[in-house]
Length: 252
Ligand code: CTP
Ligand code: MG
Image (cartoon, rainbow, N blue to C red; front, side):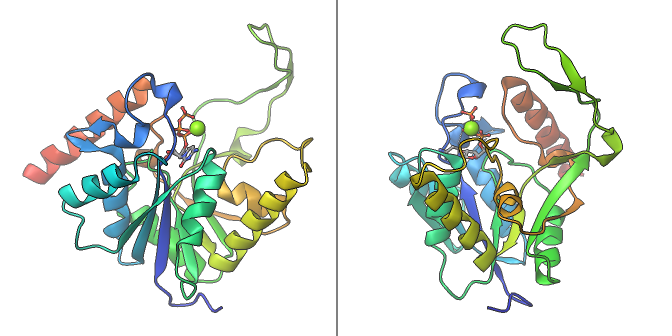
C-alpha cells in the first residue's frame, strides 16, 4: 500500500495499571487539571490534521468507562474507537492495530501517559512517514550522563562503560510507521513469543524497537520536552505545572 498523502490512524495504548505512579485508578484515567490523562492524549492527536482516526486500547475491564469518558469530554464528534487492551503494552498496541481499517496506510502509536505532546510533534512524525520513512520516532537529547552497569540489587553496581552522550536520544511518542511494517513486526514478535524464542534478547519497550529487532530502519525526528511520559508521582507535578502555564498563556 502506498502511504504517501494518506491520513494516519493513531493507536493509544492506555491499558496499563500505572504501578510506578502509586495506588489509584489506572494511570490513563488519572486526573491532570480536571481531565483524565487519556483525554489529554487523545485531544493532542485529534488536533492534528494528519490524524483521521484514534483507536484507544483501554483496560480490559474499563472499555465502557473509557467510551463514556471520551464522550463526556467533548470528543464525541471525532472518529474514536475503543478496544480492550492486553496484559502488556505490546499486546495492547497489537489489539489496537487490529481495529484499524485495512485502507489506512500510516499508523502512529502514542502513549496515553504522554498527555501534553504538542501537536507539532504529531504532525512532524506523520509527515516523516508520509515522506517515505518506514518508522519514525521523536526524541530529545539527554540531560544526564548515562552509564552502563552490571546490575546488582541494592548496589554498588560496577560501571562497564559510559556511552558518548552526544549519540544518545531519549525516545518519546507518537512513533509513526508504515502500517504494513508495524503489523509485520508485531506479528513476528507474537510468533517469536509463542515459539518461546527471543528469550536471550533484552526486552523491547517501544514499537520502533520491534522494527529494529527485525532489521527495519528507524529514523529520529526532534521531539519536545513537553512530550515527557507521566511515570512517577513527580511527573504528575511537572505535568500540572506545564498545563497551568499553558492555560495562563491561553487566557491572555
Ligand atoms: N500500556 C498498555 N497496556 C499494558 C501496559 C501498558 O496499553 N498492558 C500503556 C500504558 O497505559 C501507557 C503506555 O502503555 O499509556 C506506556 O506504559 P507505562 O508508562 O509503562 O504505563 P503503565 O504500564 O501503566 O505504568 P507502570 O509500568 O508504572 O505500571
Ligand atoms: Mg508499564
